[in-house]
Length: 65
Image 1: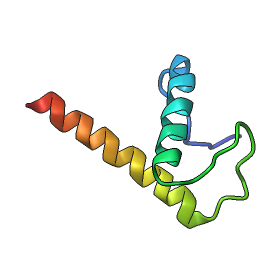
Image 2: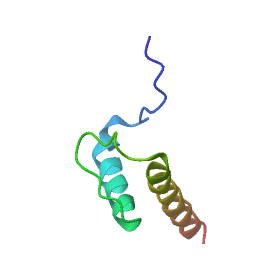
Image 3: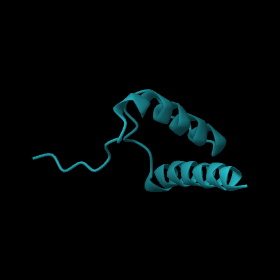
């Protein structure tokens, strides 16, 4: 049984999420490749995820105004 919790609720959004991840990586100075990125350090992966969360919070705050 696969217990992967990293599934998108809307599978059609995968391409948009991939673009969003690549954009966030560029903003923090990390070069992501299309495909395998298992050579990233935990710090690099965390920086990308943190940047994504920061942008999502900023977008939500803009919507609330």
